[in-house]
Image (cartoon, rainbow, N blue to C red; front, side, top):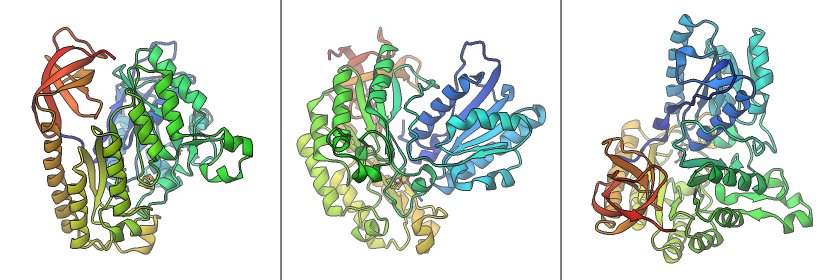
Length: 480
Ligand code: 5AD
Ligand code: SF4
């Protein structure tokens, strides 16, 4: 199984049938990053109280919501195609209402209502609690919109409805927004300024998941390492906090430790890390607790110092190497993955070679690779010309993908004949006689089912591999 190369391809429908007295039907689907999938679970929880159960059938829906991604133009085009499909269904079911949520709602605002006649409702990522009011406007025959961004909304008080869940792994969102202002990125505009969620509510959610049988959580945020709880409010206002708030503040290393200690048998992952914010404290905390998984997703975007500066990435190639060296020293078995963009404005052949040589140094386990897509309103779009021809971007992307495939293979081959601990998540897509799960390093592993079941943690002897998958045989249950 190949790792996903373009996150915008991750769009699949999220569905759940609930058995309550609710009479109305909600069809909700999500595109883009994990945060969107997690947000849809919050939206489903809000609407459950409003009388909506979720349905897998678009044709049956009273309300269709699409949680959207704006990160690249292609992601937006995918959503526009879906709106065409909804339009076709609406001809059969004219009472059906359609809402657009997430980053496209925030970026395009009322333009969406003008451009896409099918859309009745536009709701930005911080306004989901307003959905009940907005829906009553829609029911009265008016279009409704709320795209206000918030200083403190984290949805920490909402218990998500787990959609499309395997009952084993779940997302727990810990921060919202991003203050980094990478020049290519639309996220700071669509998701607002950075704020963190109360650790108490995070721990309650983790405990609740454990009590329901979940075995693995992923702490989610655009920039998890910059997590900082000091009683609420924006990260940028921390300086204005009182002395007592500062003294009792909880940072990411501390939160990670709290989660690891609270549920010592729960596997803990986190994503995404930004190089300038990933501290030694976090790496050392990972080393201290066996239940914190051995994987860091550490986007680099480019290997060229000049391009990193143009991207406003706030670290150099050398600082990135130092961080990689520290990770390797403290966590020798840790897998590292990346995001890389090919063809950022002004990128030369030499800059591209610098990206390839950075990859050679790190030899990432896997990564997500993209061609640059100009996003309206970003600093890069305003100040730079998108001057790398599309075919050059594609060729450079291809070089990066090819090299990554070689490195992934080196990484998976290193596990041959060793024994790895795998948490079983689902049936393998290729064979109904095999389970599929992941190692602590996040490598997908498949092996014959035998008497094991979903949610078991098992030792697997690795006998074969592809560049993305380990293939083996279970030996016994892994003792924790
Ligand atoms: N063009 C291409 N890729 C982008 N990303 C973010 N913005 C853009 C863009 N304008 C990529 C980055 C980021 C990942 C989530 O998406 O690599 O880390
Ligand atoms: Fe976008 Fe950069 Fe923030 Fe990531 S860290 S969401 S790439 S601005």
